[in-house]
Length: 252
Image (tube, rainbow, N blue to C red; front, side, top):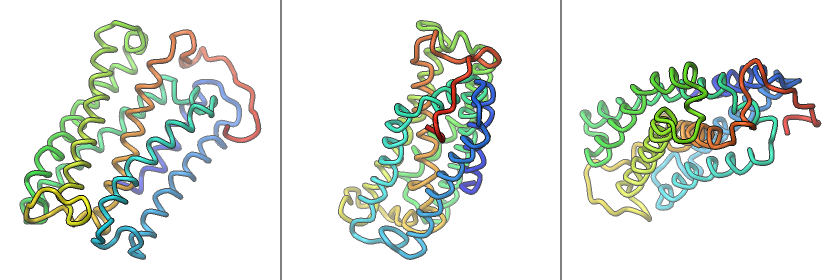
């Protein structure tokens, strides 16, 4: 599942930038895919070398928390300085694909499997797994709304807009709850809940990819969707009627 993240990023930017009429959209999408690939590759390399994570060190939960939060904050901040990316991500084509990424949240069912095998505590498993599934199974509704009710989703005060915002906020809240419980059940510097088993399974591959890659990527999608529909209607780019934005050197 994690291996598909660079491809999903490429397709989201490619279709969004093309719909917005941006010149050089293949290169822009390629830069994003390369960045996502490098990010995931770095996380896997650190796990394989047992640097920071890959093993249950005392500070591993602290580092996992930072690995979840920092990429989201950095990307949201960077997008404010990348008008071409914001334009691409603000189109109906891109937003629809960002919502479709949340379908992968159904993979949270694996937590229930690990719990049944005695590898995860129920305190973490039930809210994390069912929270993910709740977002995953409702993602098609968000996708439908973005494609067929795009104008209503963007219109302040509309029911579709309120529902879409609520869905994204719920998705982010699920992440916060899951990451917090995962850290507090992990033996180490932030251990609070004395449960057995602990969440130490998230220290090594492949499960470490959840907190360091898959979860922050999904959180980025929620944040980007919320930011996109908050923009004034006059600035939102619609598929097929977007104005062209000149290329200013690379992806910026």
